[in-house]
Image 1 (cartoon, rainbow, N blue to C red):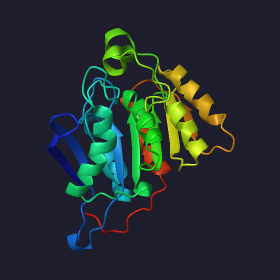
Image 2 (image 1 turned 45 degrees about the horizontal axis):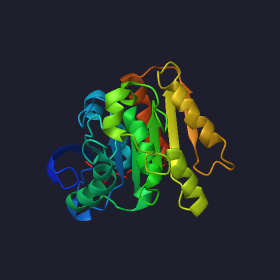
Image 3 (image 1 turned 90 degrees about the vertical axis):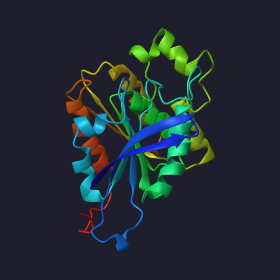
Amino acid sequence: MALAKIHFFSQALGMCVTCNAILPQYKNPAQARKVPVLWLLHGANGNYTDWVRRTNVERYAAPYGLAVIMPSAHNSSYTDMAHGMKFYTYISRELPETLPKMLNLSTRREDNFIAGLSMGGAGSMAIGLSNPEKYSAIGCLSAGAVNTHGSLHEGRKFLLSYGEGEQKGTYQDPFGSAETILKKKLPCPRIYHACGDSDFLLQDAHTTRDFFTALPGNPFDYTYVEDPGAHSWDFWDAHIKEFIEFLNLPKTTGEFV
C-alpha cells in the first residue's frame, strides 16, 4: 500500500486543500484496475491526519485492495455552513468527481463506501443517505445520525454550521433522507453503526438505532453494535476494522505489493 498526501485546489471551498490517501500498489502496473474506495471522515477538532496517525486502518484495508481517502472538514459538521464554507458539497460532490480522475479509484456505487467517527459518523450518515446512488455502505462510529450532545451543537458553533434554518427535509435530515429512499424505492446503503456503552453520544446512537430497527424488513441491512468503550481511539480502531469486514469485499490474490 502507498500513502500519499494530496494537495489540490477545491472549487467548492475556494482554497487549497489536503487529503491523505492510502492506495493499493500493484506489482504489475500494466494490470491495474479501478479499486474500491472508503471515504473516511474525522471527528470534531480533527483533520486528515487523524486516522493514519491513530489507527491501523492501512493494515485493515490492505487485504482487500481498498483505497482510503481522508479529507479535512474542520468543525463544519460536514455541512454547507450557514456562515462558512461548503463542506458538504466538497465531500459529497467534488471529491468523488475529482480524485478518481487523479487516482485509480472506482466510481461504481458498489465500490464506494463512506464512514466516520463522532462528527464524521453523523456526517457519513447525512452524506451517505442523501446520496444513495453513490455509496453502497455507511459506517457510523460513536455518533447518532444526528448528534444533539457535544460542543458542536451548542451556541455559536451550531449557528455557524446550521444557522437558524429548518433542517428537516434537507440533506441535514438523515432520517428524512432514509424515508425518501424508501418512498422513492432508491437503492438502500447498508449501514454499520457502533457506539461504546460509556460514550457521551450514546443517547443519540440509541435514537438512531431505534429509528432503523423499527423499519419493517431491515431495508438498510442495519447492524448496531454496542460494545464496552468510550469516545476513544481504542474503540474506533477496533470498529473501523469491523466496518471494513462488514463490506464483504473479496480478499486480494497477490496482485498488490
